[in-house]
Structure formats: C-alpha cells, structure tokens
Image (cartoon, rainbow, N blue to C red; front, side, top):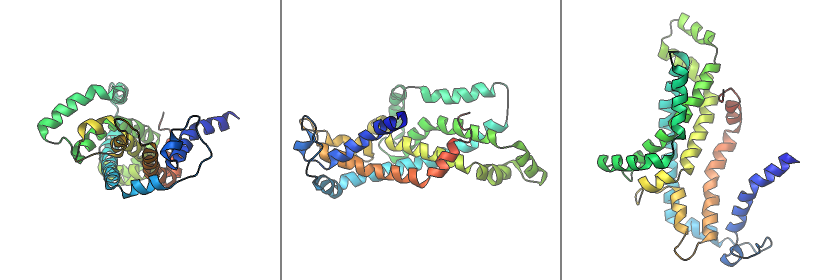
Amino acid sequence: VALYTFALWSFFPLYWLLNTSFKTSKDALARPPTFIFKPIMKNYIEVIKNNEVWGYFLDSLIVALGTTCFGLLIGVPAAYVLARFKFKGSADFGFWILSTRMTPPIAMLIPFFIMYLKLGILDTHIGLIIAHVGLNLSIIVWLMRGFYEEIPLEIEEASYVDGSSFFQTFYKIAVPLSMPGISAVGIITFLFSWNEFLFALVLGDSVVRTSPVGLYGFVGYQKIYWGQLSASASLLLIPVLFFVFLFQKPLIKGLTLGSFK
C-alpha cells in the first residue's frame, strides 16, 4: 500500500502537467479544478508552430550532450586514477571532490559571469557547457571511482603481465568493464544539464537559451499561458523519458554495482 501511495504521489505532477496541456485557459484556471473537460490540441499546435521552442530544444540538446561527453572524458580517467593510485589523504581528497558539489551554485555564479565576460564566451554553447561540466564533474568522479574500486585488481594485473601499458589497460580492460557505470553516470549528467536553470539563465541570453529558461517566457507580466507552458514542458519530457527507457537496464545495473559505496 505504501509503495502504491508513493507511486501515485510521484506520478500525480506528471498527470497534472499532461492534463493541463489539453485544457483551455478557462479550464486550466478553474476553481475547483476540473477533471472532466473537453480536451483540445490547440496548445500543442501553437507550440509546435513556434520556432523559438525548437530553438530552445536544440540549445538544450547541444549543451546537455556536450556536458555529458566532456564530463565523461575528463571525469572517467580522473576517477580511475583516484581508484588505482592510493596516497596519503586520498580518501579525504575524494571526499573533498564530492564536497564541491555541495557548494551553493549561486555562490559561483557571479565569478563565472565576470570571468566569462572578460573571456568573451558569455552567451555561448561552449561557455554553458564548461559551467555545467564544472557543476557535474564531482558527481562523475565520485560515482565512477566507486565502480573502478569494484573491479578486481587481478584482471588488470593479468593485462600488465601480457605486456599492456597503463593506458592500454585502462581503455581495453577498465573502460569495457565499467560501461554500465559509465552509462548510468552519463544519463545522470545529461539529466542534470538538461534541467539546469540558474546558470543557463545568467550565462545565456539571446543566442543560447535552453528549454528551462525558454519555458519561463510563457510567464507573462499579467498572464501565465498555462496551456502552452504545460504542452511545451510535456514535449520536452520526451528526450528524458527516451533516454531513461532506452538505457533502463544499464542504468539500474550501473547504480547497483557499488557506485554509492
């Protein structure tokens, strides 16, 4: 019973979002809420015809994929080194890396803005990707470190005996064995970047405007366009649900292999 109650509680916001996307403005603002109404497709049609919404979607896709790729390219080797090379204070250093994720993003926002302004990368895809990589790198390193610590050293030692170098062992042995973990961490990084709002709002403007920032445009000074806002949010859930269902098995397997050790 508790499980069903929790599931109902978790999926109710999604139901409400989809429900509102098929309502007229009158039905969306009705008090008490109307659960029986005549559904309309007008909100979706207006959103699909709105080229700006597709621009937001493309910006989000570029930033999220770029953040995931660059984050994994940097974080996975770093995690492997931390897992295999033990030194005095290595455990504390690993915890320090994780603790950087606990820093309030607002505390880093102004330094990022000033630095980007001087470097000329404000309102660019690469600038927002760098910021998102910085925000998510600690999570990538921390989780992947746990995966590599679960891989038996004997497998890698056998590779060294066969004449493989450190880098060959990493790419040919460690990376294939940790693919479930890399997939899981990649999905988490993608979702964090896809949903990030604060940095995208301040470091982006007219050239780069991701979906969370773009959706804010449906909030007017005197009116909130609930129907179009809900329809846009529903459409932007599709990539998220696609990635989760497509990589469901690697995600579950990866998150149960000791990554939260």
